[in-house]
Amino acid sequence: AQATDAVVVQSHSTFDTNAVTIKTGDTVTFKNSDDYRHNIQIINAAGLVNDKGLQTADQDIKETFRATGNYTVHCAIHPAMAMAINVQ
Image (cartoon, rainbow, N blue to C red; front, side):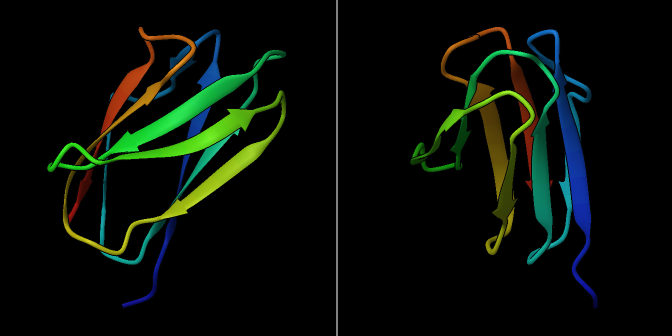
């Protein structure tokens, strides 16, 4: 199966979706369309945090998911920004 690329847009301190379902090996691109910084953190089911660091305006961050499971994504700067990623 060919890997695909899901796109999640960050706008007005929100994600444009509440949840994404992808397959193992797929990549999610987080596009910051705000004119300020975000700090994406991806948390796996075990609670391990993958901190992607500061994301500047118009910067894309790509993350390839290599393990199945449910992940939570939020912004460390804007706590109301949250979504889920289900990797099958």
